[in-house]
Image 1 (tube, rainbow, N blue to C red):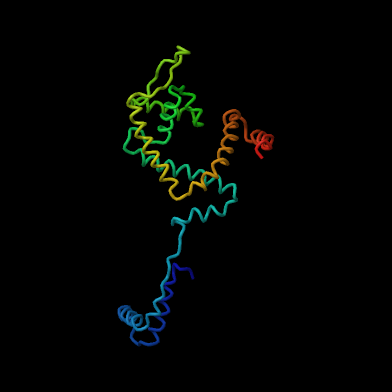
Image 2: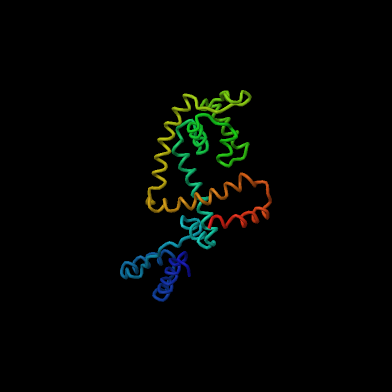
Length: 232
């Protein structure tokens, strides 16, 4: 019998003793009898630790450990990205921007001084509509502005507005705190060892994603098989 019903088994065992000792049986008398019995013989009161059930916190990690190592690695990376997004929203909650992507777009524009919309979208491997929606929100909130490209009069570039500069300054402070929080339980020695591996995987698949994204899965598999010797 699992821990879930262990206490009920204790009650049934006590009730059997109660039946042997008493001639008139009732629930109220049994409850009084049981209290007295446990008071006289406290060793009968067995402590039962609640059994873990699927809804509890350790369930995902227990389940994922049944995956093969490659699947576990990929799932861990995906989940870590979602945790980072969660903390980022908390860190940016009181600012005009409130998503990691908005922060990254503004930070990139600042680093490049001026940026093409398509360059921003491609930099973060985004769908065109997702990228344009983000840019539109930043422009509507007066954080980014469109300025003339001096080398191509037909094109417009994105630049930070004074409000955008001020907002980004505060966002950087909050994100720096988020970064410290995120790695608080992991030593620098550990995560820095992982970084080169992740960057190598990113470089490899980033090139394929950008240059061969339209190919079917079978062709991508053949392409990777021909390139993998370069990354051993």
